[in-house]
Length: 277
Length: 122
Image (cartoon, rainbow over all chains, first blue to last red; front, side, top):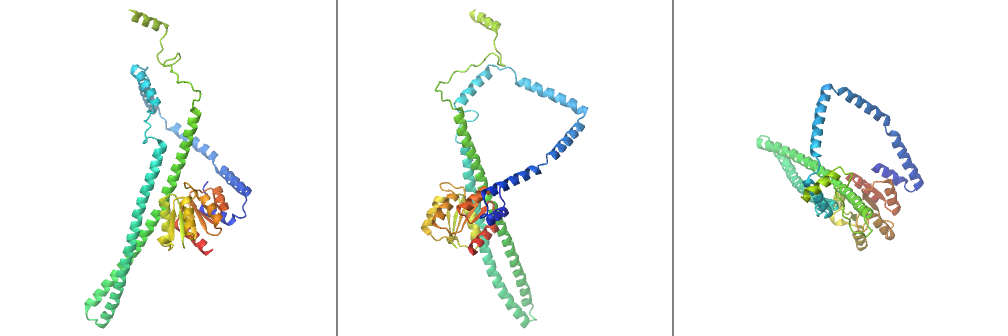
């Protein structure tokens, strides 16, 4: 169970007093609480409800349709499970050869090695995440420059506005001063809008950067899977290892009791007489 | 304030670097290390950091070993562990090794700001 930031804070404040025994007790408490909260009886009721619903839905027409479908499926299965012919036997031999030469089900190439692939995914994803970060940093840098330009523009417009105010007071009959003053005030307001939009955009970029932490978290999850696969591989190699030193025996292809066609005494006799002619 | 950021993920180092820049720390005032070995080398060479922010799981020398190594030389420097390890046992282990604060990934910029502010004021 992962700890929340609040729990860590609580732990920080009480870390000095806390002993390991107390920790174990509280873990047990948490486990007990979790046991109590599992609603098994509710689940049973739900399952019964669902089953009752399913029984009610079934109709005769559907039953007959199901029979037809099942017969169709069985016919298909029977077609596929016909007795092995020579081609199939050859295929089995091929498959054994492929398994022995590490070619089945996929050749053991760099591309198909699981841990290699996971490693590559983690590395590629790290490289791409870095590129995404470059782009986000570029946006922040550009926004910072735009904010500076905007600040310069606002400073100029405010001075212009002051000048036009004085001029419009001194020369009230000249309309152009008033018009330009009004225009300057509109542009100052537009600059304020630009400022707030860029700040909102920057916040979104910071949010995106925070979310990119999941790249690191996911990489660590992949590394955990890689570690499990490596340990499993070592274990399986150890447990299946043949340390008897015996050479590999040739295995029988058809043994009495196999489901495939096995010749009986009569078949053998007839084959002998056929080939003796 | 001079900060040493230690994480094997370059993306995480940049994220943390970005947050400390938002706090007003200049790019020249923080260094980055990709593992404990590089971090310990920088720590000894520069010998002027005010805070160390370190990940836990890293190759060569992990964050916990780094904390213990630093604590062997410097008892006072604030160290914050920033890691995906969110288990209670891990937090206790890190505290016992000598970290001053602990942040579980993913974290918000606000959390890191608060913790750094707290450490600087302390």
